[in-house]
Image 1: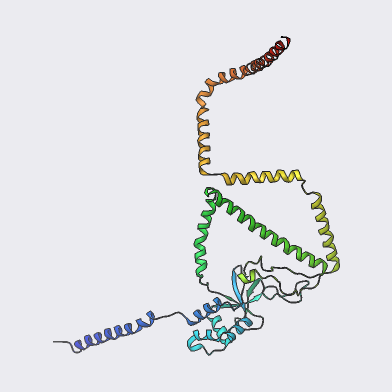
Image 2 (image 1 turned 90 degrees about the horizontal axis):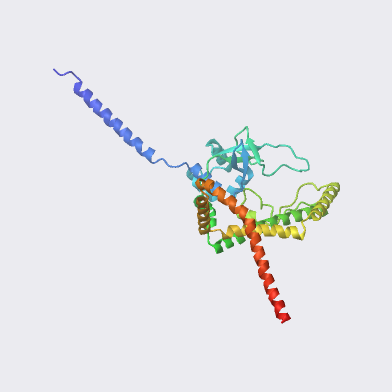
Length: 360
């Protein structure tokens, strides 16, 4: 006899297996269709945009890129089309978007480390160089700073530059084997570039010192020429921003004027003379000529000459040749004296012949 309900249990098991397979098949497509977070894409677009002003600072011994809350608000007001990336959340307020970025750990709120005015300053720094985490992670546009937490993608030019640096290093190492004209071009190009940089730095220092002593104003032409992080446009900015610091006292200006005059007089007094400059110029020119005229063929010929000299002075023949060298050295003065005597006789003989002709 068959047990009642036996076939029904098998049918139920089949239905359960079909149901579980159906559930698994319906759950799989959403996992495969999982796409990138729209706020992550939005944050990357905003960070890569040129109109959002940002700077680099140190946060807990780590360099981070950060921006100000008020700049973020004005940026999104001027570029509302970027909010379309958020799709269904495009109508959110700017403060709400900032709070969501904070919750998703795409940005963190920071605060300046130095919160007191330094001597001679009227206000705190607009872009502090050192930051610390803020206690309340809430978006605000009132003197608030926010640092990006994700690693930005490298642009194409940085990727190409990373491949270019090893090639440049190998090319620098191969400089001695370049042709002579190529060496001259590289030498004059590097010397001209170095002279341009030194001239620019000296000109900046001269303009700053003159205006500071005469007018009490701090004016650095090309203010971003030594900046670590600056765009190409900011790097060659000629005129600086308005000086907002306190004007220096006349006693400090007079003191540094006296120091500058004393330094100039000392340098003029201890300047090298013409002969010393000529010796130094000759020494430098000899070094440059040695570098420019070096070639692998000369190096190989020099190595071969050294090898032949080494073979000629074999240590096995040093003992046998010792007596020969000493006898040759002792006999050398006599040979020299003999040569001198013969030369004197040869010189005197024509003189005697000339006297005989005169008597005749």
